[in-house]
Length: 284
Image 1: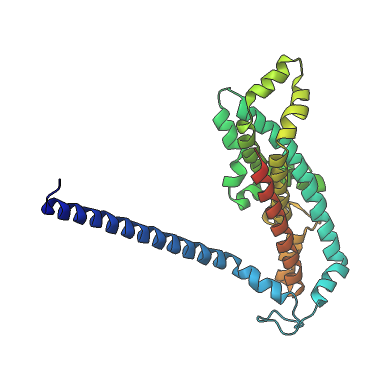
Image 2: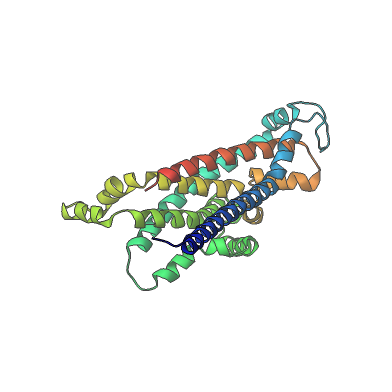
C-alpha cells in the first residue's frame, strides 16, 4: 500500500510526463506548420512567373503589361497562323520525338550494362554517362560545335539530333538503372535457363515489366530536348526550334506573342510531368 507521500510523488511524475508529451506534440505540430509554410512559399516563388505569363497571353494590349488589359485570343491566333512559329513547332516536335526515342534505346542498353555488369571501371563509365548533367551547357555546346564542325555535321539536322540525344541519355540512364536494379534478376535467369536468348529475354521478359519507367524516361528526354536552347543556338544553323525562335524574337523586339507560345509550352510541360509522375508511381 502506497503512503500519501508516494502517491503525491507518483502523481507529480505522471503530470510531468503528460506535460512533456503535450509540449512535444506542440513542437511537432509547429514544425509541420513551419515546414508546410516554407514549402508553400518556395512553390509560390517558383510558379509566380507562370501565374504572370499565362494571364498576359490573353491581353488585348500590343505591349507586355501586367495586369493584362482586356481579354483577347489575338496572340494565340498569331502563333497558329504564323508559318515561322508553325515550322519551329514542327521542328521541335520531330526533333524531340526522334532524340528521346534514340536516347531511350541507347540509354536503356547502357543502364542494363551498368545495373547487371560487374566489370572494372563501371563507376567511371556511369560518371561518363551522366557527365552532360554536370558540365555547364555552354561548355558542352562549344565542345559539340567543334566536333560537329570537324565531321561536317554542323548546322545539319543529323548533328542537331545527335546533340539532343546526348542531352537525353543521362536522364534515361539514371531512371532505367534504378528500374533494372529493382527488377528481380532471378526472373531473367529463369528465362536464360529455359533457353531464351538475351534478345528474347530483354524484349519479352524485362522490357514489359519496365514499361512505366521506360515511358517516364522517354518523357524526361522529350522535355529536355523540347526545351533546349543553348546547345541548339550553337549548332542548329538555319534550323529553328521553338525555344530558339523565342530567344531570337526577344532580341529583336518585345512581341506579346511570346507569352502565348510560353503558355502553350507551360501547359505541355505540366501535362507531361503529371503523366511522368503517374508512370513513375506505377513503376516497380
